Length: 121
Image: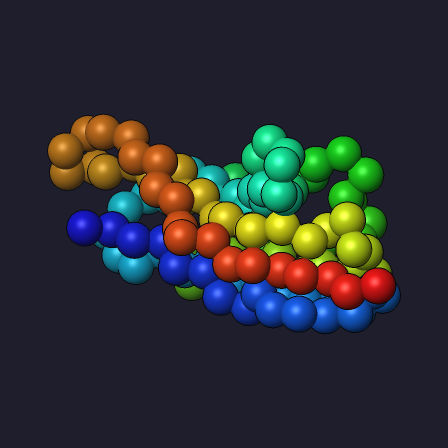
């Protein structure tokens, strides 16, 4: 079963940086897009950044400029570089992969378990 695995979360001081990684466990699927979402305590989940097959990127409100999403050359890995972090960025960050199974002709949306990012003031 295909999995999405995130890494790179942790504790950082305000103004610091973190780089999150997201890997799709199987290469047989076509990756249409990979995206990062976050959910802070008591708040709804929101889009952080998304990148599609053509490397077109979309960012959540006011995040572009501090956050950058990219994909590795192997393209089953996406990264989220987060700079100038603020306490309001504290949340669980989850990766979602939008996949197409050519063999079974079906679309899949696969979520990772999430990684906690804590920004201290």
